Image (tube, rainbow, N blue to C red):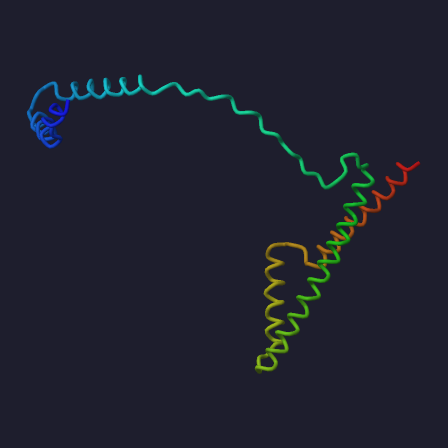
Length: 165
């Protein structure tokens, strides 16, 4: 057996293939196609069928932070409490933003910048942009939202009183 493999040379096989391929024969492409198809078929015979088991259905864990049997009144009361917390947080953020603006104004005055003119110019630009877009002012929008939240919580409290009877 060792003698058989000694007489086989990869370099000689490649040179032989190249010389045969360069000859202009009319059946070169069909023979190549049949050879490739036969090679593919032989390889497919040796590849075993995969034995795949059906994947088990995933188990879904629902994470809930609220009791599933809450009444509508409890849900609305929770929403109103969360809205009050959100309003308080926004008020704090607005207060800090105003403090920051005051600090920048003080810095501007310390560096001899005309702060009042810059503030008036920025407000004029904001007003012009607001008028161009037709949007409500921040105060009008806040009043509208506060009114709707108050109405929601008041109607919820009224419906909770009706539910309690």
